[in-house]
Length: 264
Image (cartoon, rainbow, N blue to C red; front, side, top):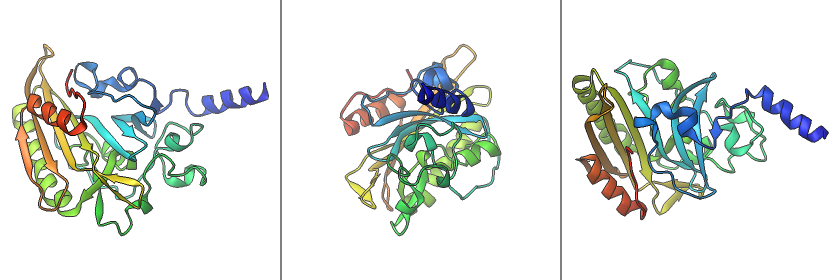
């Protein structure tokens, strides 16, 4: 009885609703076109995260605890905000300790014996030759708080340095300009994800073979009137291809080995 009471008190102190949720369509569905998330794979390794910093939810992430990288992050674009970079990285406490609160925080908040069991840590990237590659990026963030919240390791995957700093960066800038000029009067939904590869850093964190992005601009009648996709190989001499959403879904189905829908 005392144990149950203790658990209840901790739950109340943590704010009631957890950041790691059982259904992020109902908890943070505002980041998905039509309120429907992209395909969610089944299995105990996956977590649905409403990415929360200082009690504000900024985007949603479908996370793979086995590979210790996201499958995808979903977010909205509301115009260029010229936010600054935080350059220090949070973790998601509840991934490793279900008794922790809903806000992302630095690694000291998690019991050291559990820390990193289910997610990447800063030290995994040390001397790895890879950057921490954002999925939901700083450049497309809709506020400074959102930009800060993108610096969680549950929103990052190992990314080849030149690919991250040159090729993918150019694509983020190009996409932002395209959306600002083409979708100014629409609501813009974006999903960025990765495809697991065959290598790991620190024998723990999967190095993706590809990074990809899809976008959809909904008009006032909830129609996706502008959309597109981008996919690039995760290597320093990356090959990046632009395509429509249907073609990207086919590409991802081939890479994942299972059906994959982006905007349902």
